[in-house]
Image (tube, rainbow, N blue to C red; front, side, top):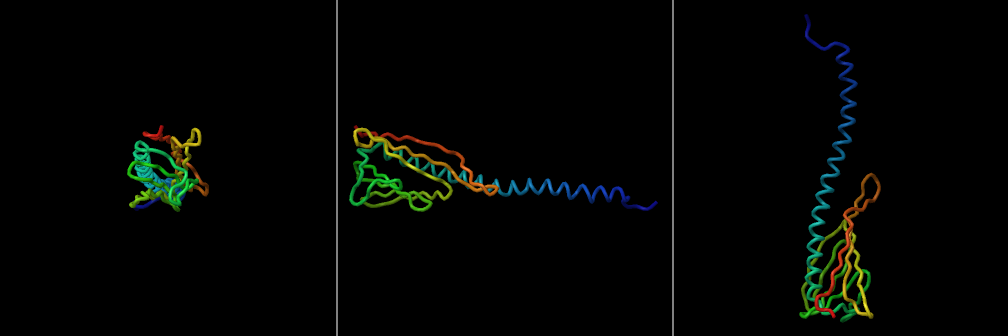
Length: 160
């Protein structure tokens, strides 16, 4: 008796293995795309959390939210916080948020896939709170998707 495969066994292998590879290909493509994207989103989420903690700390000690100081003015890309040690500017520059103390020093958060927007809440033409909204954007299957959308409201601690 000769050892080997029968014609039926070979046909089954030749038909089933490619079909199996087609199904596994989709799984591997998804895994190879989703794992790095999920890691990137997790890293940016941590960076965004650090930014929000800094804004909360600055707002806890805020004495006011001025409209303009020394050539800096509030707009959709920048807002100002008056603190006892000086005025702080938060500004969007490309894919990052920059915190500058007008007396010197800056801190930068890189957020390339995060969209951040802020709004100053006012009463009697005086700012008393900052609303920070953020979400992550990424492209999958040729479409832009938004995820982890959130909004935070920070009240000025010393603002009366």
